Amino acid sequence: MLDRLPSILLPLFAAFFVAIASFVISAGYAEHRATEIDEAAMSLAENATPSIMALAAARAELRHTQALLSDLVNDAALGRPRDRRELDEARDNLSRSIDVYLGMPVYPGELKQWQTVAQALGKLDLDTDRALSLVANGRPDEANKLVDGALRADFNSTSEAVMDSIELNARQARHLAIEIAANRVRSRRIALVLNTVSVTFAVLACAAAAVQIRRHVRLLWQQGVLLERRADELEQFAGRVAHDVLSPLGAVALALDLALRRYGEGEPARKALERGRQAIMRVKRMTDGLLEFARAGARPEPGARAEVRPVVDDLMAELVPAAAELGAELCVEPFAPCAVAASPGVLTSILANLIRNALKYLGDAAVCRVVIRVLDERDAVRIEVEDTGPGIAPALEQMVFEPHVRAQGARVPGLGLGLATVKRLTEAHGGRVGLRTVVGKGSLFWFELPRASAASARAFEIGSSTSP
Image 1 (tube, rainbow, N blue to C red):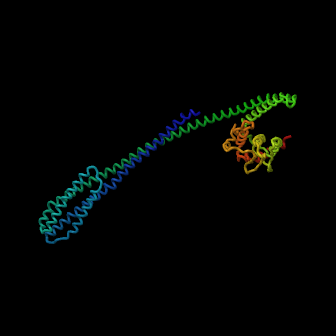
Image 2: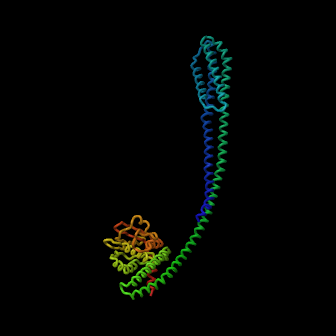
Image 3: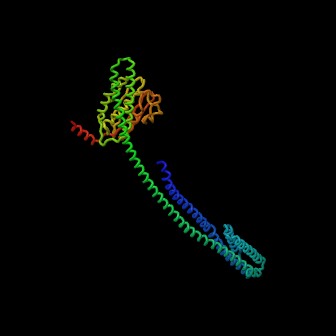
């Protein structure tokens, strides 16, 4: 299945890459066009328009200066001298307006126009100063001739130069406005095309993803069906193997028991038979462990119910003598009647594995005790098995419920499947398992199973009352 992943993911990655690339290009192009529009708008707002306003003000002040100069010279010729402060103020305003214009950035071809305005304005200033000098020296008639002749031409040429600059900036403003409008239209069109491409490829990518996911889900479902079928076959095979192996082992064990009765204690043949019998029992334990582990993942039966107290009582009757032979104490703390949503066989298997595991690993503890507690909680029944053994090393604490995990150097026989079986059975029935341990002080294994429902209780009572 892993070798199919590149062929499945490649078209998805390609479609998503094209969609993302289209979005990025669209955003980049829109940003580029927006920058151009901003630059044109800034030029229009901060150069062309202020230049036109400054030149228009300069042209108005130019005509105002011409009128004031003509009135001043005419009044002097008539013997009515005037104050020239108003004329000086007009000339200052004209100079300031021209300075504002000359301080703006230049457009293509505007530098030459600047020079024309500066030259005309310079000649106008010289002739104006000459006319004022003639008036001041008592020669108003000569000044009047200068105003009507050279100065009139100076004012006209300066006004034309200023007007040419106004028209140049107006043309530039129109060009900028047209450029802004064109950029907006062009950016909208291209952004629309790129967004359409992006959306198209995004839709195609989603469609391709849906197709591939559907195929993948179908493949997983087929594999799940195949695995379930193989699991059933494996369980049936395990049952057949266990039956086929255990049947002859039972016959061999019976034959060895009969043979052992013919020999007394201390005879060499009896020791060999004992070793053979122990070997057969080990094989039986191994086979039982493998079979129980293989079946531990099976689903619980609907409406399954197990009363906890009868299961605990049966196990105590069996395991208390075995604990006594080991020099250990096995006890149960008092608990209220309760039931779990599992069959009695499942509950027996889980609890027996935990108790046997605790007894098996008590070791050489000063106090050998195993305590069983049953806690009836709100939605589950929690059962704890606490021992006074050596505890479990931190390195193994997270792995003890995995198959074939055993403490390094363990001297107790086994396959390491008991706790793994506990975990598989508990989780298959919707429960949980856990461990608390302190090295040198002991361990507390616990498991929780869902409480049996009221419906299962009624069914259990009906079944009990109808049974002979």
